[in-house]
Image (tube, rainbow over all chains, first blue to last red; front, side, top):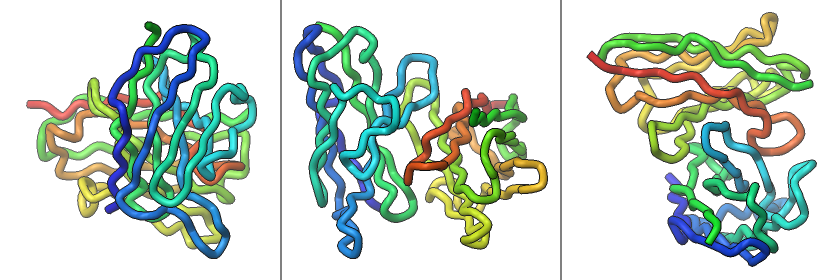
Length: 113
Length: 120
């Protein structure tokens, strides 16, 4: 199984500042035939289901604010919130959908400093 | 409007069985992949399994911790997905989410979740 490791486990960022979350996979999730990284990012607010933010490692889901961006390729990925807003307080998860089982990272909790 | 709604959760004893249902609407159900994802109390997300669409012969895939105990099925005539859970263990206690993959390659429409508690 592909193991997904996120870092850090939690971070506190001041309003308006940048938040960066990393995700590393135990093997590449880049499919060479189409050059796509099979990596998604989700946001889960307290008491709510997860919300898809980004897929193909860097494509924003419709309606997601452009302060959220994804980058990376192969085994190393990053989710960046360019200017943290109060409504961004949540736990963020990466997930690989390259090969079953489609494993999640352990989550990163983002709070306001 | 796309909606997915889970039902069938509750309290069950260890070793028992339970079937969850997921009612979908707002899209052509047979055309799309459907996932089950769970979340134990205070823990992270765990992928449980997936049902591929009609074009992919409804192939089902499972996570290691549930393989051989859980079975995913679907009834396209009822726009419904099911999760049959057998030989339940206390560690299966979780909120179970049903999620639909519509336009994105990852689950994008999620239900509110249903709680399953396995306890004596």
